[in-house]
Amino acid sequence: MEKQTFNRTGAICAGVGAVVTVVSWGIHPEITDPAGYLPIVAGSSHFVGIHWGLIIGMVLMQFGLAAVMLALREQPAPNDAGGWAQSGFYALLVGFVLWIGVFMTEVALKPLADGLRTDPTPASGALALSGLQDAGATAASFVYSLGVALLGIALLVSRRFPRWMGASGLVLGAVTSLGLGLPCMFVGKSSLTEKIASTILGTLVLVWVFVLGVMLWRMAGAGQRQAPVARATA
Image (cartoon, rainbow, N blue to C red; front, side, top):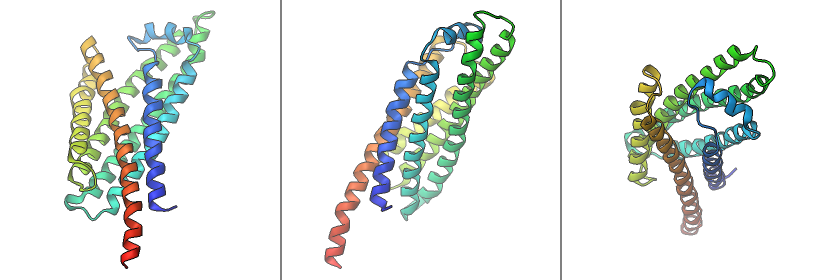
């Protein structure tokens, strides 16, 4: 596969994946507490479909971010942009695996929640699974946001992307991981303000990935235009 084709494919995956993820996340039921969450899960007829949408969106985004990482590694940029990009991608990959585990846990939670309508026996198991999902989501958000921050540093020191793109990724990732992720790990989700801030920051991260995909597409187009010029002058 040619480099321009690979970059454009990655750009499409990043953009489409971000859109699918933000739509699926937007219609996902809010988790207030594990006990109150189970009736919502049981009453939702689209619960499993929502999570398959999240899985598909995250997979597509991961491929797009891999294309960005490879584009930065190919560039002989100063300040080791490729190294920062590779570290960020590894963190994103770990966060991605954690998110997939969270989504699959929620898919497994659906039949248990449905069964509670007729048989309350598996209530303790359902509550434990719901609590595991909540803790896993906190860990996944922390690790994934850390990857966004590291990738933001790579974009910031690179000459192939606008510096504001790298700075915004660094700020969004750092605030989400350190400002919200760590407190949620040790204190827990308590205030409505924290939940609103987490939703806003998560949405902004997905918008950032979408814009990054647009820039990767434009960069691939610029490289395709420069290639015929280079061959003509050779």
